[in-house]
Image (cartoon, rainbow, N blue to C red; front, side, top):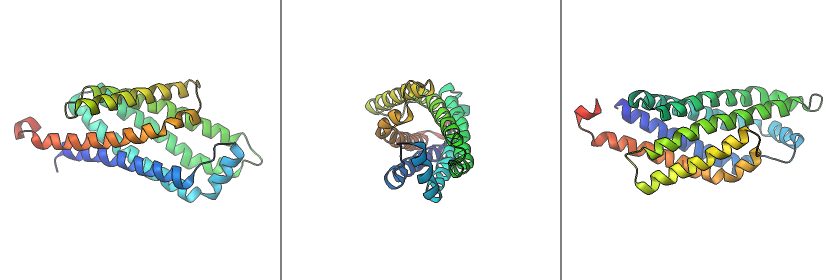
Length: 213
């Protein structure tokens, strides 16, 4: 398989995986949001499931890094580079969640300050990395030559709205719970991103051998 198509399919696969894991996490895990005590108790009880979801999402992040890095290189695009950088930063969030969350949750009764510390660190990284990712994605959609106009502008608009929300989270102008009220928009965007990857792969098939190189 040609590298262009492989990168496009890897991009699509990553966002389909994000979509599936988030749906599973929300509808099966149903994370508590009331207090740190509730969060830690639930996390300990369902750690096997939650950690499996986060490991799968880490794989999805790696898929997006590889594919966006490839497109950044061949297109010499700052927008694709921003997406790559954002997901490299995002890896740190998953390392924090998988490495620090269980220890902080188990020690909550005698060291209650640890869990809020690691949780807030993850939220900060989430806001920052998603702002970079979504800002880059706005321009990827606007400049896309493989999507119809309504999909281009729908993707750009959703990306811009979520980018502003992520920036507001980063500056603590709103909470993670407030941003997650826009969760359905994230799911729609992940499906649009998966579609974008398929269109990029199809576009490659339509090129002449000379254009492909």
